[in-house]
Length: 598
Image (tube, rainbow, N blue to C red; front, side):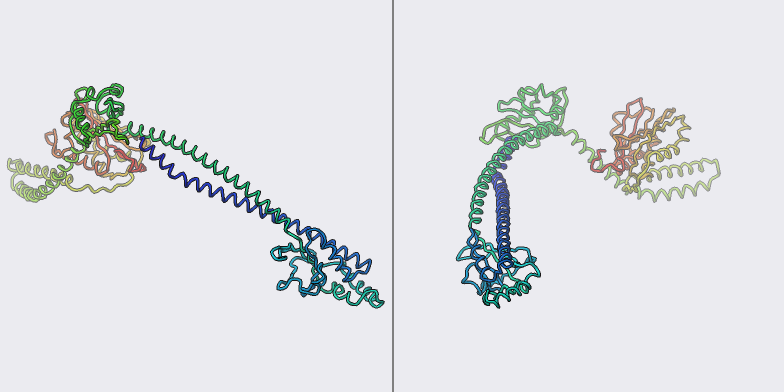
């Protein structure tokens, strides 16, 4: 037990790094996922702020342009100055108005006017007319700009035409130069974009600081979780090892206590420390009387003589002997014994295992009996075959000679006796053949109550002729059984007839049928005859054994053979002068075959 417990503990310690590693990986994944989600959430929040800031700047520029154009007749130069002044605000990198061809018609950097706003990249507004869209674009050597763009709407719909006529009049009178109206007059006909570039450096710095904070917290959480996992694992390992040791101890105690062989254990001083119930049953000793004593004082000399072999280091395996235990009871036993040595090579004690061979020898005797019956059956079949042909000839000649004599003559009577004896001998041969040939069963689910009733009807007249009363007790809840009804009826008739023949001066024949343990159907046939002698009980199923003057000795042998073919059980109980009881026990139809103990 201790070795097994230590082995289990070592196994748990070997697997612990994998458990800790797996737990750490899971925790690390959780921390990384949370950190990524937090970073993405910060980025979305910052994008929302920058987008709203860019949208506010666009609306402010549009409002300024709308006011100037409507009230002060602004044109391109004034809107250009508005972009330049607005671009001076903190975090604003640039402002520009882009025409459909991608050229900057107005820009916070005047040097970029009439040039492609972004080479090799066309600015396309993807949202609805009055909805801002954004993207991150390169700015400078290594930086980025958060760019917000939307359709430029400095005038209300329908107002551009009147504004154009007013600008034309002012141009004719010289108040507005011709070049100033290069692009803003196209606002009503074409879609211009206003683009705002915002500096993302402060926000990126805030994100980096947030990421650093998240990393620090994640590391702290990871270390805390790792330490918690390790602590929980060691606590669980301790509790598991303790529970495993308790379970192993309880399991070992239950096994050695309820094992079907006797187990006797001694300590290093040679005193008995364990004496299980099977050992008590075999030896007839109570465990309380044996524990704490030397084996020499309670066990037979044959067993104690094994101590010398054990002390020499030998191991005894299945040594058969006859031992006389308490009450002068001789028991055939098989003995196995060995010494218990711990890991340090020290003697811990000795174990003695006793196995009762009484049941084994009974089964061996039964096997020998079956082999003898099989050989006898084969021989009988051959002999019967050789005898039946001459019997037919003898009967034919006897019948012929009987017809030659006058009725009432001694010769005719002698011929009749010859015919009767030939018939009797033929019946004996028929029974012998029935016993010798293999039993061919045709089993079906059968209700025993009608079967018993029909079989009793067949012997009622013969029982009445001998002044024998018949009583039947059949329960209402008898389960169906899988049997060959004709064969079982034959068995019951043989048992009935034996009982009737045993009660020559009258008596009572009782038939009971009931359910046993909810899984078996039991038929018991009892008579009030003289009973069976104890010496004859073990022989009544042997072929040709009979105590009757006219019996053949094959009836009960055939009954036993049919019952065994059904995998059922036939048992006889009798006391001289008190009658006999034959019991047939069948498994119910729905009872699993592997659980049957017939």
